[in-house]
Figure 1: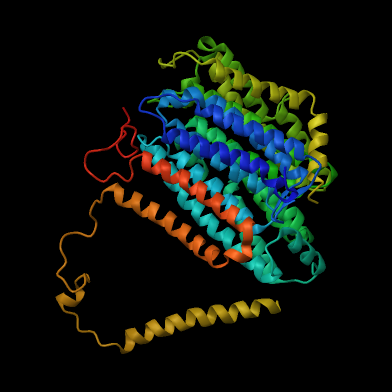
Figure 2: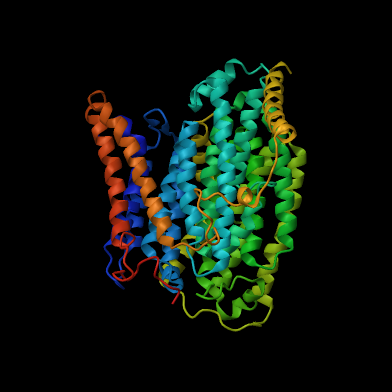
Length: 479
Length: 132
């Protein structure tokens, strides 16, 4: 840390260096030679984690456009955990499915660097650049199984709709600049506070466009159309990564833009978020019930979880503040664990991701069935898991902020969602195996990563106080 | 609702201008179509074959690489002009940018994207690799 103005970029630089190293290693890899490229990624991510821990409470800012405040660092922490777990899951999946390791890790790390940048960005244009760094790498990752037509289709759909949403986002930035004369979030915030009472249609237009751009990324209904196809077509390991990392990063930027810069206009944007949150929870849950493919079902479940996050954003009072970041953390580890199990159970030519593939899993793979059950229960929000505490705080915040309607919708959809999570559990424990052909063995590394994720779910579910305090203190740095 | 007035005027003017121009040319323009006039324009030559031909994927790869280095030049020129004002900090930044691009270039080179012949392709070449 030679110069204080470079401090905030250190975590990003660590990840970028690891990505470049992965790319260079792949370039010089001989034919058929195996290299521990994943290890490079782990080193970079651990370095990023350590440097963000060192930056804690220091409020470092780089070049005015990146701020390593505690909010950004907390999200960075979540992203680092997501990255490390994904790498641990990946090592055996890559070899089994014939995914090119160098490209995979390089893209994943580049995407992570964009996510971290997005969590720390203090300028709308930097948010946009970060969004593109993150998204373009994820588009490619979605279609990295080039021998599978559905992966290519998913990648293409995701790319087209992503590009479309970027246009909305850019237009929003343009209008914001037109109103405020700057793209810096802190400056915008001051300006908005000064003229908050003025009914300026341009501000509404700017907020609307930015909101649409963000909502695409966190797949809020009615901007969720790409989600089921992209999540189903992508390899399970990539789906786990993008359903947690992309969502966490985009939501962090969403929260920062709307809770700090556009906070004075909360009376204008709150009703829109109310409707979006309600729609997202209802559609995500109701359509999720009808799915027979596990990845597709979890895609709808992740849409519904986006709705709960929006409830948290809306009711960001003293309780809600902590709830947002805590929920992000809980959702990230839980969803990653669920997709980790799916990834581990897949085979090269067969995803093994239909619901019926899970029949009788308890008899053939008791450990995996148990792990899957825990993560599904946590997604459903049953105690004593992380998902329960997360939902508890979100709904408590909604009630204390006076959003009774949303709280009721949230609880009802949670109850419905438990139905389709439990359906998988019933399949695993009470049905007999109908189709043969589950994969042979699971490596120690994958199981270790799963065990870590499950431990985190229980830790967050049973002893949440520490993380909740941390979350509450981190988010208080932005508003 | 004052602020919206500008929008309305702008939109009406924009759409209206385009509509009037197209409408006028439809109403007033003479039309004497001949087969030659209706043929696709190909620099005055008679069109050969279908426009939707399959190209080698290498064209796209080269086009993408060209774009990247084009952008690099677009950054280098302004930097070179402002070299003295930007000082060492600017130099280090451009060097960093250049190093990152170089890693990408080495990767592309080693992967055989720049090998044009029908032979001389490396194993592990992304264009060649099959599912097996």
